Amino acid sequence: MKLKKIIYDFELNLITVLLPVMCTIVLFATFGRYTKWYSTPWAEELSRYIFIWIVFLGTVIGVKRQAHYNVDVLVEKLPPGGKTIVYYIQVCVELAFFGFIAYQAAKIMRVQIRMSQTSPSLKIPMYLAYGAIPTGMVLSFIWTAVAAVRKMISKGGREERTNAD
Image 1 (cartoon, rainbow, N blue to C red):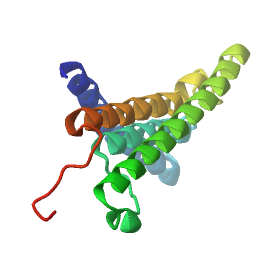
Image 2 (cartoon, rainbow, N blue to C red):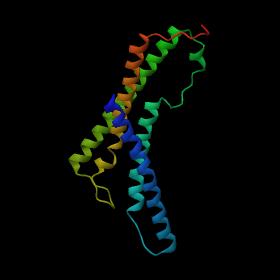
Image 3 (cartoon, helix red, strand yellow):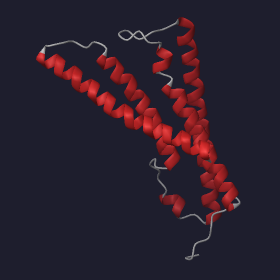
Image 4 (cartoon, rainbow, N blue to C red):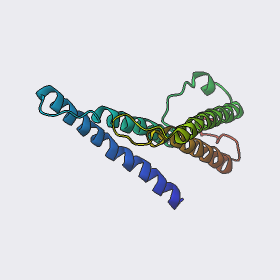
């Protein structure tokens, strides 16, 4: 459990640092452009790559917190057994999605590595910039699987009964 907390805290802290860094870069570049004092051709590119990392790490945080939107009007009308079945179908769909996107992104990264593709302004390897996609999807896959296994262990695969039942 300690490793899980370390990873989760790292993800959260990284986003907490990256967002103000990105905002500062954009502010700096915008100020230079409008005052015509200096030019920062790399700023737009760097802020875009930082934003990509923020989005995919934010997705991981949302998965971990189970904070993504979900429409459950019909699911709430189901009996506890039906809710459980729908939950595990949902988990399977999520795992398939995360796995598919991670696999496809990894294929693209392999091509970028093989071609030694670099970014136009920063000249950094493109696989570093777009590594956020498979990283985010693999971590989302892991957190989803962990939550499903935890639910299976804690509830024996069944919904807990409430006092209202």
